[in-house]
Image (cartoon, rainbow, N blue to C red; front, top):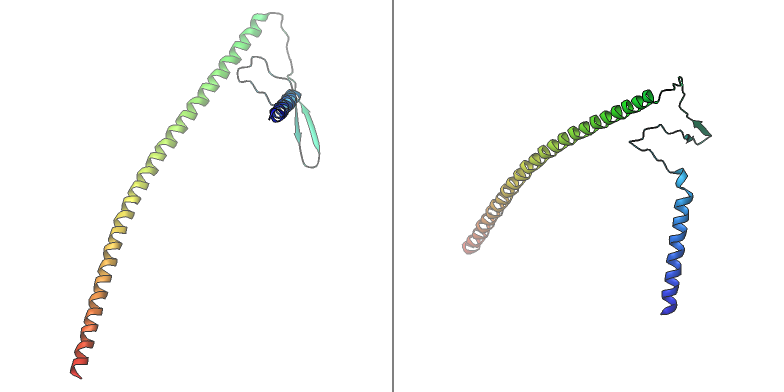
Length: 155
C-alpha cells in the first residue's frame, strides 16, 4: 500500500514537472497580443505553407525623431484614446448583435410554441378521427355478422 502511494506521488510529480517544463519551454512561441499595449510589439511573424515556410518580420519604421517627449506622450495618449474608442465601438456593435440575436430567439420560440400548439390540435383531431374509423368499422362488422346470422336462419 505504501509503495502504491509512493509510486503515485512520484508519477504525479513527474507529470507536473514535465508539464511545467513544457509550458515554460514553449512560452516564447505563444501568441500574446495585449489589448492595452502602449508600444507596438516588434516580433517576427511566421506563416507556414504546405510547400514552403516563409518568415516575415515586421518592425515599425521611424520617420521622424523629435527631442521633446511631450509630443510622443501626446501621440501615445491619442493612440490609447483611439484604441479605447475602437474597443468601445466594438463592444457596442457586439451588444447590438447580441440584442438582435436574442430578439430572433424570442421570435423563434414563439413560432415554435405556435407550431407545437398546432401539432397538439392536429394530434387530437387525428385521434378523434381514428376513433370514429374504428367505431364505424365495428358497426360494419356487427351488421355483417347480423346478416350472416339471418342468412343461416333462413336456410
